[in-house]
Structures are given as structure tokens and as C-alpha cells.
Length: 114
Image (cartoon, rainbow, N blue to C red):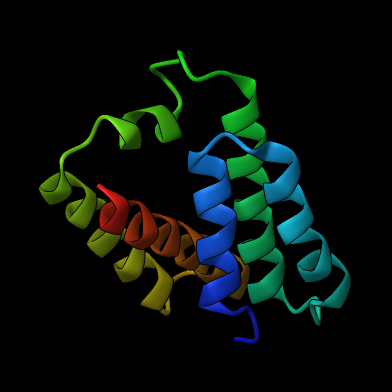
């Protein structure tokens, strides 16, 4: 897992601050330098999806990102535990485990800020 938690933390903080161009710049080296195994592809796809969803609208109550913003710490931890469970499950493919790992990391960072 060569994707640094510090880089992901910078990315998530930029998203939370709605500084999308900077968040995109944080992702650029990951896009170019990732080894492109299935786990990394899933992880990067989740981060890209977060960026696209955050840019789309802050008012859409159907977006998971909007729901996270209004969640309390206890709810955030519940989401994180569930994502971690999926990320560790042998029932999921590497791509899916990477995808869920990115979401768990996103929630870890947002819960520290709240």
C-alpha cells in the first residue's frame, strides 16, 4: 500500500475546504506514480469520485459526502468500521478493498476535524 496517509489527509482537507483545484493537484502524483495494481486502482477511483461528487453540489442530500458532513462522530465511526470491514473482507476483490479503504481513510480524517 504505497499511498501515503499524509497525502490522503491533505487531499481530504482540501476537499473539506472546497479547494478543488488544490485537491486535484494532490492527487496528480498518485495518478501518475501509482503502480496500478487493482487495490490502488480502486483506491484512486474512490478519491476521484469524492472529488467529482464534492464539486457537483454541496446541497444534494442524496450524495454520501453531503450525508457525512452532517453526521455526528458516532455515526462517522460506524461508517468507518463498516468500510474497514469491507476493506479487509476476502469476499471482495482487491479493487473493492482499495475503494473501501479510501472511504475509511476519508472518514478517519473528517472525524478528526469535527
